[in-house]
Image (cartoon, rainbow, N blue to C red; front, top):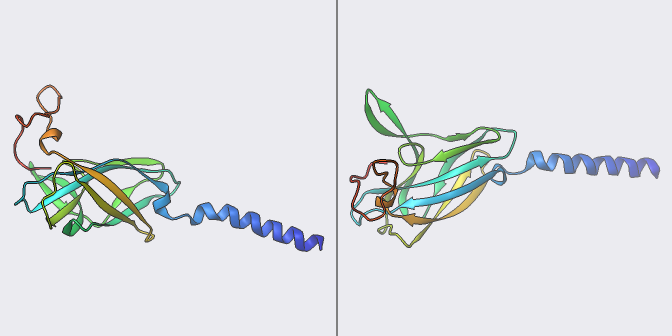
Length: 169
């Protein structure tokens, strides 16, 4: 009886210890400051941005995102090709162990291509993030004005719609 109890206790301890290792990757990702960019009614795409923090000891890859606000959702980055900034679809966004990765205008981001309706300030957009282990994390984000995100000279941001132009990100 004592041997059986010891074996069960050891088994329980091993199971509890390995639960952390078996936790879904989505459980190890903290999402902060998510937002989607407002686009004019005829714009072919928008983008969403956020900060992803991986609190695990393992690298985690974001491999796909889903949303019902657009026909196609893709992971993208910007590259500098001989002085010309180009946007490229990528297979994954890697979040190294115990590190934070920022998805931001001009860098990594999630493209919302072919919005079904205009994405406007005041709305919220839901984006479901899928990680390489198949686990998912739903993120609800406010829509922000493109103009409010444009830096002014001197490092200030515009908020009055009178500075910046274009739709680059």
